[in-house]
Length: 168
Ligand SMILES: [Zn+2]
Image (cartoon, rainbow, N blue to C red; front, side, top):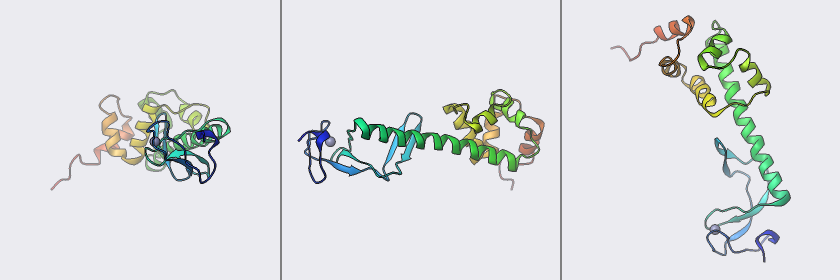
């Protein structure tokens, strides 16, 4: 029985590890990496041939299109979440800092943040790394950025109010 004609309850030989351990498995809840995003949690029911020994999956045709479609959606959602959490932090914690100052610091053109939010620009990996850093650890991220960019005065003041080490 070929791996691609597999029916529920049947097993087939794995093309990767040669074990007779491939069965149709629901990949809901499994994690997959796609390009620059790791551990995307598959959130739909989809049964595809998967090896119980080595974990290799083998999917093609309509199932592959569906599988890829779900991962692309999860990938886009992960990027969107990075943008949203960054904007939430700069709008709440740094309400007195103009967005253009952030754009200057991040080395992106004015208006780029709103284009990212609207989805008319894709969030690059390095920019995502920086934005996640700011969203999660604003103080440390700003100190890091300050090694290469001049901070807008409002942000420099923000850092100035926070001691570098606990004083005591
Ligand atoms: Zn295998």
